[in-house]
Length: 135
Image 1: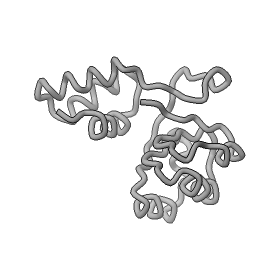
Image 2: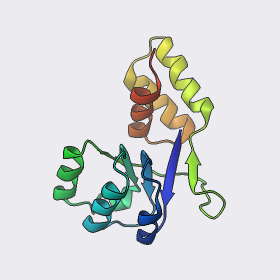
Image 3: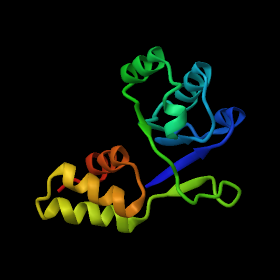
């Protein structure tokens, strides 16, 4: 699973229309969010750092809900944009989630443990759990 890291508003218009998960590494305006959803019609998740999350307007939150796009808080730890424009969630993390699900662990348990071990936000773990794991 890959997360497309976008570090400037100009970059939004160069995105592949098939992007599903995007991390915005800048403080987006309402206009930037609209542009992103328009450029990437298949988008499912927009991830923002915690500090930027607080500045998102209620109208944008409602717009994203209507578009069925999840707005998640989180970071891409240790990612260098100059080396690769994608942050890849290690397959070991996805395997760990599947394994715990098979063992019958609760969703909350899986979210907490995997988030702690992988530095992923619990909301992102929940998204992976729903998306990737079909046991």
